[in-house]
Each structure stands twice: as C-alpha cells, then as structure tokens.
Image (tube, rainbow over all chains, first blue to last red; front, side, top):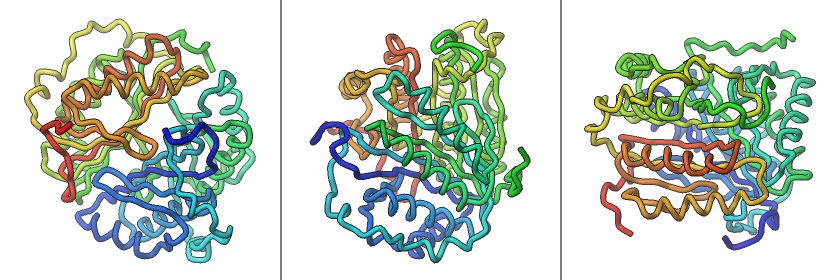
Length: 202
Length: 202
C-alpha cells in the first residue's frame, strides 16, 4: 500500500493466455513478438502476464496479443482482469507520460476474428455498485456486439475488435465516478464448439 | 434479477479450463468423467463452465476437475470466479438440499500436485472492502501455502489441495459478513517455467 485509492490513473491488466496446442510456447512468443509493448510496463511469470500503463495502451496491447495469437487458427482462451485505482497498486509513472497514439491499432484493426467473451464489472467500495453495472450492461446493448445474460457474467459475441471497444468503453465509463474498478473477462476464439456470432440478432 | 442481494446461499463458479495440448478436448472430457458432479448444477459452453450449488460441493468439484486434468502431466491453466449473493443469480434450490458429504474428496485428497495461483477477493457493496481483503491476506499467511504479493492479486504456491483449502476458507470467512462476494483465481500446473514451491520459505 504505497498510495491511497484513486490517486493514480494507471491501469493494469493481469491475464493468462492459453493456446490449446502443443505449440503453445511458440504461439505465445509469436504473439508477444508481433506486439509493440514499448509504451507499457510488463511482467510475465508462469501464471500470468501483467501489463500496466495508460488505459489506451493497456487495452491496445492486450487486444493485440489476443488477436495475434488467434490468427494462428488455434483454439485460444484468454482470461484476465483490468484494474484501476487499486490501493495496493504501486506507480510506474514513467509510463503515464506516453502520448495517446496506440502503437498496435494499425496492425490489428483489419483482423476480422470472431470470439465469444464473458465479462463481469466490479465497481468497488460503493453501495450503489449494482446500478453502475446495470448502466453499463444497458449501454452495451446499444453497440454492434451481441449481448446476453450468463451466470455471474455478461456474454458478448462478435468481432474481437468490437468486443475490446465495448470492454474499454465500459471500463472507461465506470471509472468516471468510481475510483476503484475491476473488470474480469474470458475470451475464446476458434473453439471447435464455438457459438460466436458476427451478426447481432437482437 | 429474480431476488434481492443475499437472499440465496447458492455458490457459483464460472471457470475456463485450458490444457495447453492438442489433446485438450480429451483431457477436458477425461477430467469431467472422473469427477462426480451429481450434487451440483452445471452448464458448459464454448467459453466456460458454470458450477452451482452448496459451497462445499462447488469447491469440491472445481478442485477435482483441476486435479484430474493436471494429473495427465500436461500444462494446465484454470481461470475462474467464485460468487455468492449475486443479485442477478437465479436459484437452483434443489441443489441446496444435498448433504455435506463431498463426493470427490476421497479421490483427490492424495493427489500431490503442485501449482501456482493468483487470486483476488472482491467484497462488493462495502466501503470497508479493503479491510476485508487485508484480513484474509493476513490470515492466509498463517497457512501452509506460500503467500506473496502480485499486481492486482495475491500469489499462492503450494499443493493444489492446500491452495483450494485456502481459497475456500477465504471465501467462507468473507461471506460471513459480506452478502455479495466474488473471488477470481488463476491456477497453473506443470508449467515448463513453473515456480511452484512446496516448502514454505517465509
């Protein structure tokens, strides 16, 4: 605990990338090599990878890692948690001075990968947290992503780029008046039993 | 929203099991076949599996699925979220009448599998949530599991059975005075870069 809640605007994402393949080490290394991570702090161990920095770059890098792994055609899962305002977070302020130009957007914006996703939003320290959650679910239904209910989560189906745009907006909108927000997500692409739908049906 | 917060004591766990192997379908089916799930509600889709029922059986089943998958020797990751008191949860009350005899304990208690784990506890709707989290981290340090700090999470290293005992106790202790609790976790076993330590060093 180096700081009080909400005193840093640094965003973090701790995630586990799981290619369901004997070549999982190669696929992870390939994805990491394809992604420009020069604007974020990062650390990988045997359980997960942590990316920290400005919100725009954290989402840009996590999206790009997933897309580059998924374009191999293998079944890929990614589970993680985005976080801002954690009282236990320590600063990496040098990364907060970067410009707002996302380094991986040009490489990823044309990748037409479909995925299924389940996410859950946790506005912390607030008695009105359920209102904040429902506001964002309602907003999500206005996007091009297919939104449905799941136990303990909201399910999203669509293009990976649209899903990440939605997740980033939900996170950004919630943090406007909640100082400590976490958001969990699990993405699945190229599943042999995949139900990912491109066309919104409702 | 079928009920108010905290009116059901049903526990749920939504998780994704990821064997890093071409044989991932076989390994998942093998693990599910080995586990007795007759005391829980369950549903699987292309993104995740959801288990719901009494706390003792939900933890028993999730632990057994991970252990049976890991005993294949393949690199296995499991990420998920335990939850209780979710206002959006709908009841499956028939499963709440089961006895407290865990059906998979005899099969799993002797499996000496090591793993690394990162978990995060989210007591929702409470301004004093950080106190609740720190209470449980402090308590965790008194167990046989190696506990260390990680960004946005607490890292656990040790035997899978000890890790699940710890997670279940943390969840159980927190729910005693918080009506809506979620707890995320990622487990990794048989990683080629594994750092799992059996012996507690601090």
